[in-house]
Structure formats: structure tokens, C-alpha cells
Image 1 (tube, rainbow, N blue to C red):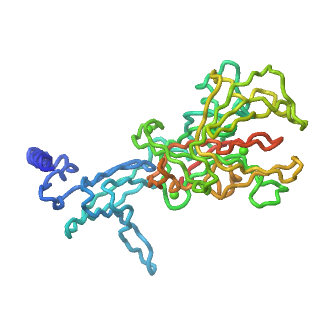
Image 2: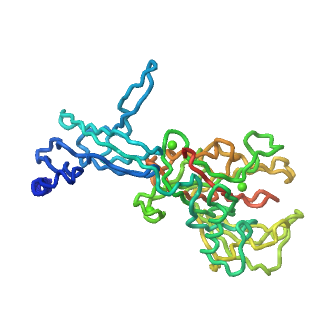
Image 3: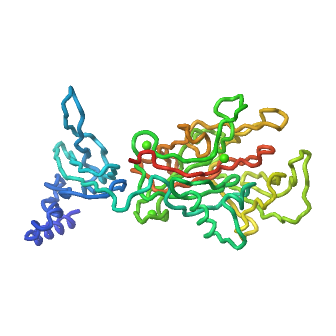
Length: 417
Ligand SMILES: [Ca+2]
Ligand SMILES: [Ca+2]
Ligand SMILES: [Ca+2]
């Protein structure tokens, strides 16, 4: 500590002639080694584009009680009143984000050993140079499980590689006229991102579109074609536009803490011999009840059935491996045979926090970034998110309807102005 302080003092002294020119570095003076608060610790001003996170380091330790606030206006008795609105407490580094291009007066109040000090600065939020889109801007990965729509949505053509299929998923999902990709059964996933950071404001922050609908004849409320997908989010902390070293957090939906939920579930799918002798079932639609072998890490295995409605391969044809594994959080099966005779199956919608789990106009398709949890199951405080991963959270076949498979049909920032 001491060594550093001396160094900073020297630097401050040597550059004193330049202080007028580099005003924003003037805070390097006056750090004393006694542990009391410096005279200045913030730059005079900071600038950032809207929908981007600005990191401001107070350079003060956790032994100081810190309160960050911005000046805000409200109307009281028909008069405009300016007040300090607290935006963060007891964090040495502020992660600031705004959807508005405007200036903010920033105040940091620090309290150490009963001494309190106020530091002020200004944050200039600029409009972006190239206009943002509120919708998905890029698709980084697409790795579906097996399923009856695989090789069709998006369509596989002979010779297509993994990269080509990701590109096709991207063509389906980017922008406001997005169509759809299927993720197949449990674990199949897609990873996409936005061209800006979706801020974590109060309430729900983004919507994931799917093809869920309420069943016309479903007796139970909020049931029909609901195929819940687990959502994971990441904030582009290293700000390079890619989901690389950034940590992923699971959105803890309504089922997360229930003991019917299996964490670290893993399933392996085995490539079928498309020319093998099929083993038809008792039902007319069961073309081959031993079509694709699967095995999980809970000691269970079985076959995925080929039905009469889909004749193409259910195994991703661009995968050269003879088997592949997918893992994640598995939710309790949500489909049941309402008819009792196998003719009418319904899938119950879970309360919140999943993709393709409720119609697109329903609030349950909106997600709050504050539901994000780390790998230890603790809630995390994210300033916003740039990337989303969705994977099918159910391992179930619903009779003639086939496997429960999450579909993703787009996504957007609910706060976008
Ligand atoms: Ca939120
Ligand atoms: Ca990154
Ligand atoms: Ca669906």
C-alpha cells in the first residue's frame, strides 16, 4: 500500500505541469498513506454509448462505505425537484448503463472512520454511431438434440457443415422478421446475442419468442403446447462482442429450487442406422419404437421413436460423431395424456423463467435478468446481458406429438426505446 502511495505521489508531482491538459487524471494527487480519503478519486467526466456498460473504479477499498447516486428529477407539488437517486451501494466499482443518450451528474459518497467525503463527476451517454437493433443480432452456436423436426428447421442440405448450420440458424433468428429453429429433445441448444447490452432494470428485461400456444380443449388452465427451455445468460464482461470468457448464469425459473428438478443431467444420443429393420409399435403412428438409442447419467436408457409424420433422419446429419452428449438442468415432465386414450396430450406451462413455455403475448415469455444465478445457486447482480443460451429442459415423448422440444423464434430487449 505504502509503496503504491509514494509512487502515485511522485507521479502526481512530476506531471503537475500537465495537470491542466490531462484534467481527468488529476485525481492521482493527494493519496495519503494514512488510510484517510483522497481529495479526488473520480475523473471529471466519463463517456459511454447508451446500452453499454461503463465501469467506474472508485479506487477506494471496501473499508469505506460507498454510495453511488445520480441526480434525478421528480415533480413534487407541480414543481420540479432535483434529488440524488441511489444507484449502487458498497461496491468499489460502479457498472453504469443507460438506455438514454443524456448527461448524468454522478455523486460518490465515501465514509471511512466517521469521515465522509463527496466526489462528483459527470457521465456523458452518447447515442450509438450505428443504430442498434432490439432483436437478436447474431447466432454463435446451434447444437440440437435428436428430434422429429431436426434437419428440417433449419433445413439441412447434403454437405452442410456445423458452421453452415449455425449460419442457417442465424438467418432464421436475426432481426424483427425472425422465423424459427427447433432444438430437438433434452439439451439441444442455440446461443445468440444482441448488438448492445440489455440493461437489467426493474422488472422483466427481455422476451424470448417461441411457438407455444394454449390448447383449445385443455381442461387445465395455462396448458397446451408448452415445451419449456432452460435459459442461460451472459454479460460481455471483457467487451469483445463474443461469448468467450464471459461467465454463464442460469435463469432460475419457477422450478429451479424444487426437488423435482435434476441438475447436471446428461444424456447421450446414438446415431441410428437409418436402414435398419424398424420395430413398429401398437399405435398406428409408431413406425420404429427402437429408432434412436439414448442413455442418461441417472442409469436410464431407452429409444426415441420414429413416427409416421416425419420420415427424415431425426439425428443431426451434419454431426459426424456416432454419439453425442448434452447436459444441463432437467425439468419434470410437463406433458400428460388428458384424453386417457392417447389422442389428446397437453403440456402444462411452468410459472415463469423458461423459453417456449407460454404464448408470445403472455408475460411468462418475458425474463428478468435478476433471476440469474451462478453455478453455486446464488443470485448474481448483473448490469445487463449480451448473450443468451436456450436448451430444451424436458426429456419426454408425448405420444404421437413426439418429443418435447423447445423452439426459439426470436428474442428482443423489452426496454428498447
Ligand atoms: Ca430486471
Ligand atoms: Ca466476451
Ligand atoms: Ca414448441
